[in-house]
Image (tube, rainbow, N blue to C red; front, side):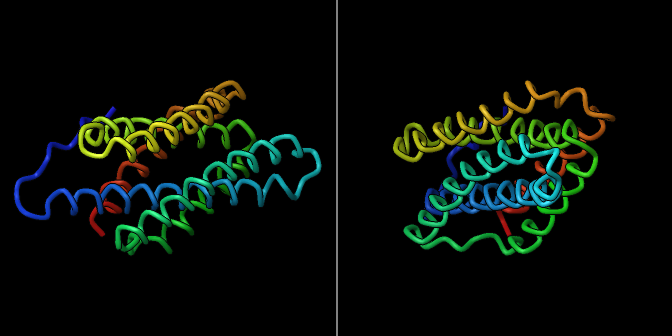
Length: 186
């Protein structure tokens, strides 16, 4: 779990921090939607993978709800999305398709790795916002719980049995952490 970022001093600092939170969370949900789309592009084309395609479609629909909420929050708060959005869309799709081409367990390993990072990220934001914006903290808590359900499902489906799991997971988690840092600012 990442530690909450302490409040910054100065006029306008809370608004600037809220902008970072909304921007990065929007970027994360955008990436998640495209990861699932990439996985479904592979599995949806093969009849033998109908079960996982349906599971991925359901998880993608959860991420789409989160993304729509962050779209609305960006507009309400007049926060621009990350300039990296086109790259995150493409990277998410490629990551999803690439792990799906490696097999179902690798696709689940991708979900498990991403959601592990996101859970820690949301937990830090929730702790930071509880006293300052309890409504947003509650929304993030709900989203975090849904992300945890995705992670737990992926583990139950054999994520940790994927070939090269430790390396695959480490690389995906490192990429997620880098995308978080970049998306907060850019």
